[in-house]
Length: 277
Image (cartoon, rainbow, N blue to C red; front, side):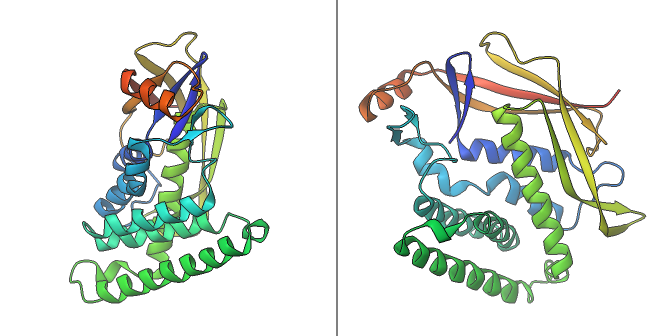
């Protein structure tokens, strides 16, 4: 779950909905000088489905006693996070082995950011087992794809690393836009492309700044507009959208949260991206 505070109300956006926005970003990506490494459809699919493991948890969110809101992706226990990550890669594999490989590599990038030295021994042991499982999954998928007539030419390290960096950027950008906690951001590790060749040593930086101020009141449509420079998309304007759940108050316990979610209404969450004038 991703939670955005909005004038003493909260917009709850499921992880699969956030991932769908990542997929929308990927579908629009590829402006002048920005790489679209093949196979691109598989990367779009991985971006849109990389959080499928959250589906069950987000359908019935768990109450967080500390915030009196549902647990979100930032405060669930790392033990649960590893279970969700494993499920996400496994679910995607049923539709695309290449996309599952990308999801697993993305997951391991997130996994490596956590400091397990502060965790109890039981979690460190589980983390070690999880790491071995994901490495084994990646090795199996690569070995399998080597016999795939379409994908075999795309599984070399440079191409897979470009995919991982882009998937990470799309994931981060989606979360940044949904949370809306800052008026500016910089994506500083974007694969570049020029004259049909990838520029491995010259990553691009993409800057975002909010145009105007956030909405003063809660409306049916959240309409933040962001200026993006340099422009990484193929078209002159990009609209991103998904449904959100409107939660109007904090809840004292799980049953109250369940009732509030049953009675809540859906809102359209939408943001616009425009090039620098």
